[in-house]
Image (cartoon, rainbow, N blue to C red):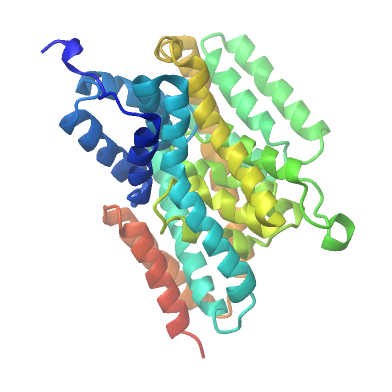
Length: 393
């Protein structure tokens, strides 16, 4: 069969938008389920592109930062109707989850947060979310940490993050060390410079600011928080958690408890998991904050395809770039692991019965480890909430 037999139908721009809007309404279960849904409809049934080309495209998207399912929709929209098609496809795919998260954030802030009756429910869900993140760290690490040096980079990034190093030092150092690892002297030099910078430069998180001193969160800062997360999302949406947390909870604009609640709620909506950033932005800065952080988070996912459409696959085939990105990704694994420890420590301060909390965490971790499926994470979050409610005195 020739590649000429694969081509998208001639859709009007409104019909193209509605097509991907429908995908967005059904985008439950995380990236694997979302990608499978798009592939089934557009590759296997409607034959927009060949399966081989789809697989190459998916491989490219997995190397680049950003939510793969969203990037695939942008790319497929461009194949159908050029850059405006890519823009409409991406907007259609993300819009249902974005609007739902706005509604959820409004209900949470104005009706749920602070309720004594709901406190134990959300605490149970938060404990379960920590277990889900722990499983995600293991899963991402198993995919990325393919040799001893990558493990060392991840460990160094974990230690540097816990020590308060500026967020970009472990990432740049990890990428450069792995890229030049065949030249031992250069790799040692990069590592030494990274240690010196980590010691001399200020800590990564700005000093927390009180509401009285700061007022509402800075819209520009929230946009940058989202952009940082969007540019550093390697290996899954969980890798955006450290950077969004640092620039929201780290600034004192929201609590770690609310942040974890946002991650839990995002996992239950038809949307890329990075939509938790919308929740954090809304809690920190209302509707303008939600719009700003969401724009920053999804901008790279649009830009990589829309700007580098013609050269994307060729660029990512560069072996040197592969090693650089592998080093950065290994450092990100360490940063997520450090953030998991920080969030865990924060959560233990709200626990009244450590033994019960530990049992709930371990039970959720076992289920997340052994059971597969698109509904596992939402089911675990619901079960954690019910467990918290049942344990209420």
